[in-house]
Amino acid sequence: MKILLCPLSDGGYLYPAIAAGRELRRRGHHVSVLGRSTAATVASDARLPFAAAEDFGGCRAFSATWWGPTGAAQYRAIVRAARETGADLLVTSVLCNGALLAAEALDIPVVVVGLSAHLWDYRAGADDEPHLGRTRQSRTQDCLQIYAGLREQTGLAGRAPRWGDEPLLGDALLLRGDPELEYPGAQLPERVRHVGPLSWEPTPDPAEVEEIGDHLARSGKPVVYVHLGRFFEGRSLWPRLNEAFTGGRFQAVVEQGRSTDPQPAPDADVLLVRKRWMGPLVDRAGLVLSSGTTAPVLAALLRGRPLALSPNGSEQPLLTGACLRAGVAVHFPNSPSADAPALLESAWRDEGLRARAAVLGSRLAAMDSAARAADVVERVAGTSAASRAGVSAAPSFEVSTAPSAEASVSSKENHEYAISRPR
Image (cartoon, one colour):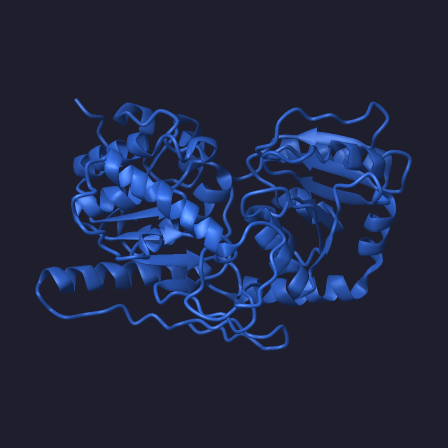
């Protein structure tokens, strides 16, 4: 089977797709990557053939920052690349509406790699779910409106969506978290599967890791790893970071991520970095402070590190709420009235918080998530093939119901090809 990975090229979306792709290649499938030209080195590190979206007319089309306005360019780039390569199946990420429509136009299946918790409406239950930010219904309706607008733009509005009133899920949506991160009693849509973290990142440069280690050793203070997502329309977290890491007992390694305009105070114990990897830095830390995006949350949990979360916009409040319910995180308010150093000290010393993070992290680490993801991809491909042959077949996905916080979770379950540029 020929599989085209076409997620957003930002690490939080690209890396888990690569984790699944590497397992699919190990099973003998032809797997390649389509993305921004800047992702070429990442694909090379993963030993997967790569094509630049710009060569297929997809400028900015695989950037999380531009995911809405560039949907049509993403659609065209994926259609062209898939036709050039003879792709039988697409693997994409949430927010890639262009990939969903490309699969529909090409009449091939598409599997969507999601975040650590479900973003949109549940199938049932969770009527009393509190909301730190916007509601699920609001988020779902906005995403569906953007999707519907792209159908108009690409000329597909005249045909009924292949997936009825749940088109955002594709043929299957893979959640990278644990059922404990869903609201208790909620029922996920039928095409949603928990597969685990799909953890992968480029190989760190040993010299860079050593240089950072030397810097941290000179201070000698305990390390907090800080990973900032986008600030959206909210206030910058930098005043609170400067308060927390100036003249106190902690030092910070701050990954800028997709945030802009870093503002560390001159005397703050802050080391700014911008790396394609975070594992070695989380390993050195005893606590992870984040805005509540999936990549740093999972990186922390997989290493048994508790979290201090300061959500701003988009999915950040939802993931923060999930982690607070699971008892693996504390809220780090972005407020002048909050005592930032005291909050860090309290979280650092909370043994219960640390123990719960270790338990959940061990459960996530025990999942063979790449194998689970590959199983779903192969099952979707088989179902699609059977359907084309006129055989009635449906994916045998189980419907997940989120357990209570106390419930246990069961743990069931090299060919390459070059992509030619368009002439």
